[in-house]
Image 1: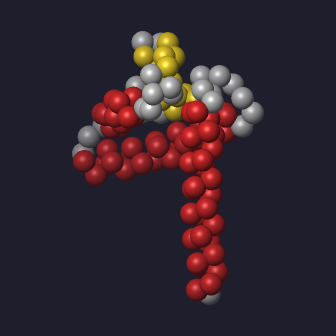
Image 2: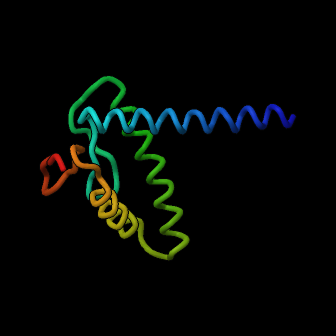
Image 3: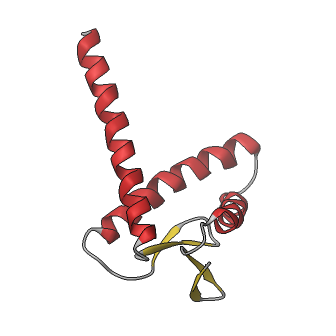
Length: 105
């Protein structure tokens, strides 16, 4: 039983790392970028990008909802703060959505 639990945990960890690698690659290639609403957006359509963005945004939304509840603030407030931080932390050469336009930072 412990081995099955360990394997399940390990598989979850590996899938998380794989998603992170895919996200970094998508950002490096200019397929996706950060938005001021705290979510990822599609800059340039490419295979599997839509699914990646949906997956990342679903996970972010879930975390934002938890943070909003824990801190007794609105989801919109968490999204705005997360968006501000994400744009600030975006690496040079990656895209951010500012005033409706994708801009390379």
